[in-house]
Image 1 (cartoon, rainbow, N blue to C red):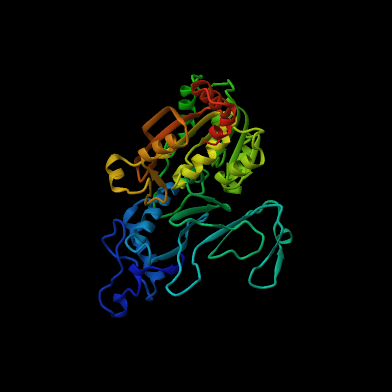
Image 2: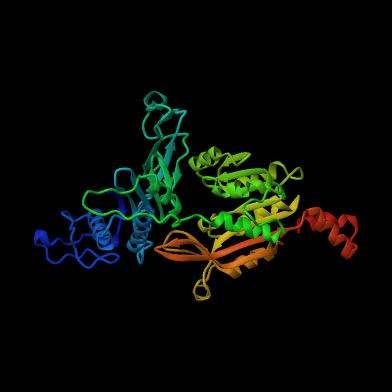
Length: 441
């Protein structure tokens, strides 16, 4: 365990072993008994012991990786809760022989300009020379690594120039295995099934049920989209009904595999280069682009305006990582307006009671994923001129802590720019000089 930050709840705990009175270390989760006690008086030791006590109380058998991921995420959020502004909580936690967890709750100490967070970098072949930022020193990793290596580096700030360092989001938990970061339960389950979970000679091991943590969103969204468009909903659909499509947040390519037979030319976009590589290796995309989905679409629109666009845009499990969806809706609209087409996506949603308690259109959940108000999504559909073809509002999207997480699957349509102009001109009998105004609207 390694920790950088400042956790008010665990500052200067008293240790009964040193004769300082009763311990003040808070109990987390289901903990009712303190087994692990800090030797020193740092918040790092105290918070580590509190997490160990909570995990000991939680499990009588070795948990699977997705279960352990959810437990660590829940404990991390509990540690921060109530002191969100004052807490700086960045830690690494090694679990077992293969995996390491990294959690970030960044911030700056009072009176300091130093930002304390977590950044990570994944180096893959072909390796290049890296130059440190703070000293004049360079290393040619092509001489120290071979083609079988993959290296993940986690640090409080970027250490080198001209490398693709990524800052972790506030409240984000990543599980690193074999040099790759994972943040979704079904991804952790895949690592578990590869035999890289926890092992022990003393504790029995829990097995994953075959259908547990199955990632069904792509299949459900494809079937709903086919139904909305009047196409074959079966898994054997071989009719191409979209010329050019883009998969936003394609991940390892499971979503692209579902839509591949329906699309003539398929582009995948993902922020994580390693996940994009897995998607490329899956062989279901004609093109893979690494970067932020909204920025990529915006740049393509600016570079190719009036030449071509997409007629199908889909996003499986992407909006759980985006709070304000307005910029994304705006960019997707621009990508579709030249050809006209379909926009399909999934979104975790709030129930009616939670919607009343939320002033904004979205809320960051304790699992560091965003849930959105249904009426917020409906307002964006109306604002950007989409039409709802078909939607579901109580679909099980995933499981968290053994409970079903409900959300919406939505299929929208947008007429092409030309058809909208033609429709306005025919209905209103407007002169030709009004067309550019209608186009901008």
